[in-house]
Amino acid sequence: MGFPSLSLPERLATLVHSKYSSAKTSGALTLSPTYLAIVYVNDIPFQLRYCPALSRKPTGEQTGIDQRANDKRTQTSTKFDPFENPALEILVAQVPRGQHTHHLVLNKYPVIPQHFILATKEYKDQAELLEEDDLSITYQCLKQWSDDGSNQRLFAFFNSGAHSGASQDHRHVQFLDIGEMGRDDNAKLWKPLIDLADEHGVKDQGNSTNSLPFVYDSVRIPESVTPQVLLHCYEQLYFSAQRTVDEMSPDHRPPLDDLPSSKFGSKKANISYNLAMTTRRMMICPRRSKGAMISTTNQGTPKQIGPISLNGTLLAGTLMVKTNEEWEALRGIDGSKRLEGIFGEIGIPHRINDKY
Image (cartoon, rainbow, N blue to C red; front, side, top):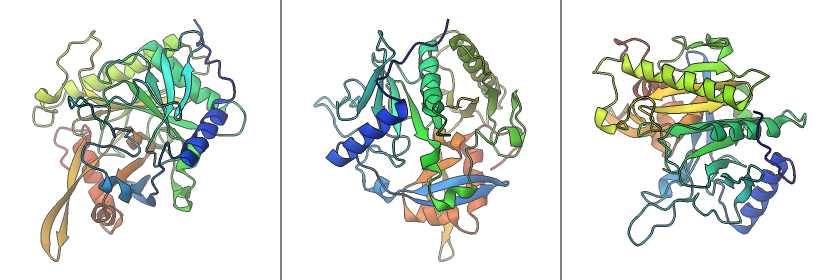
């Protein structure tokens, strides 16, 4: 079977841009400015973004690259679900044609312009395995964004599990415009990590090399891809990541209490992971922690700051900090070493005796 038709009234990029502009003008969404620096880890460039607005948000209200509107709570303290009934001001479309199983909705608190989200219309758990329609609609969005010959490209990412950096329980895939991510002059030396895969040891299929202190895996998406092939690529990567976690020593393995209690073959994932996707490649990174502290000094006195939390934008070569102290520590003289240490804490080490 082929891909379901999104049947949009205009190009996806046009729809998103128009809705974003009107929502920003009306105040339905708030773009938070960021400062940008490039930090290298083993010659691989990463965007370090500092967003002061993140530190001003009340505890529990989440925003930024990995976070959506969570600015409402019910009287019973149930977590507000921003995807259950999204406001018309930020609703881009309902897809696919004739079924409307998913919403396309803008991120209400973006740090990258035109950040939008694909969410299931009916509630499904973020910790469950993705299904064929999730993947096929994701690919359709990626494809339509770049099909007009303008060289516009999207980066899609999915955070799943307690250690992945996921901020909402309702299943959703997020999209960032790669051109918008690279618009700053400081970003000219940056490329998304998923695009650098071929240059750093991952060909059509295979595990990562030791260029970075965490394991990731990647497969190339064939030009003649079908929804069934996409699902096979995803399952192949997921089970590879599951084996990586299973082979870890108990000292490195994520705490069992934090892992979903399930078996292979069930809908719920056994591991925490980040998944990334472009029209050309799908990539996965198994996780053992959502963040890490970093060591610094204050007038000669050792000090711990953080935690620095990472999500699926890691596979775009991008991370976010919310305080000036974190910003200075990671873009300073020892920034590369500190960032490498964070990567070693949040991911799965290549060798059991790796220590970061």
